[in-house]
Image (cartoon, rainbow, N blue to C red; front, side, top):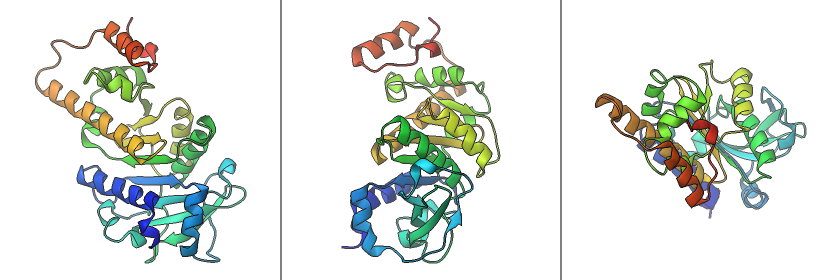
Length: 273
């Protein structure tokens, strides 16, 4: 056995590999983070480095004090994660104030965690609080069809969500909270982290205009599937528009009926009832 045989590690690497296969991670685009459980941390500890240096996160996340996270490395390519995980991902521990981190495993050839670490951790903090610890995954990718739509659809949550809900019957049931919209901002810093975390208090998915998509969920399957469903909706939307636009669509009452029959509340303010 090695740390790479642990279930959480296999799940993490699997998301990186599948996201790359789908074309969402050109070059070093995109990043992934996972808040480890106490049992997973205990199983991984025999492989940890001792007395590694602390570095500033660039923000403060006190509610994540002393927690451990598995994260992708800055500048690392997703295609290389399954090939050499020890050089492209790492486990970090936060300090008692949630202001600094240290690498306890991984990035053996050097490097640091993803440049989007402040955004990831601020959103982990808000999701941990709001879901009583259930949510553990934050995933950012560059799905092409969704990015394309940010150049043609109005950048407001209601319009963007409604358009993608219409693209397949199950969509409102997969992302019933809708899509948050973050206007274009320089990535990697505290400003975009704050803007995204404010929205993620009410959403599980945030569109970064002209950039990509940011999703959160309880586990790898849930989070990856959310990303996948939203991108497929965007792909259908691109095709519909290229064929001249909609001739018919799901009626507004149809969304209400879906919500009622499946027992999944949706944001009715998205609808034009």
